[in-house]
Image (cartoon, rainbow, N blue to C red; front, side, top):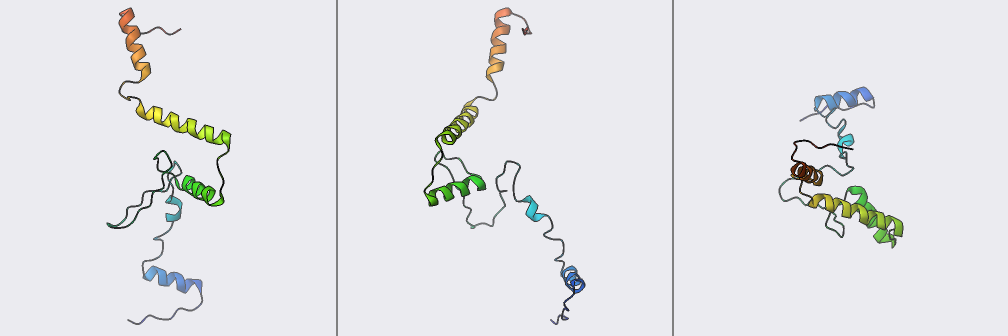
Length: 127
């Protein structure tokens, strides 16, 4: 296999990439690395590859930002501020409470059914 030598021009470099079908393959791929929630996309791996997931003390999978922050703070010996730690615990408790709720019968639906049963009407008057 003999390849013709490239000169130092941009045109020859682009021609080389077009011939090798290597031009445009990675365009925009760097923009799709993160989800709307801020976490790294789950890119499919080959069988046998290692996938590292960092989890917090509650067993939740951290986003890349949270994982980096935890590693950095642990390395530098830092800790959460009291107010931020309290907010974080409240946010996690709220997430856990929402997960435990029965989504088929939310509390507002149960209250509506109770009022309808007591008043024996198919509607509920607000106000």
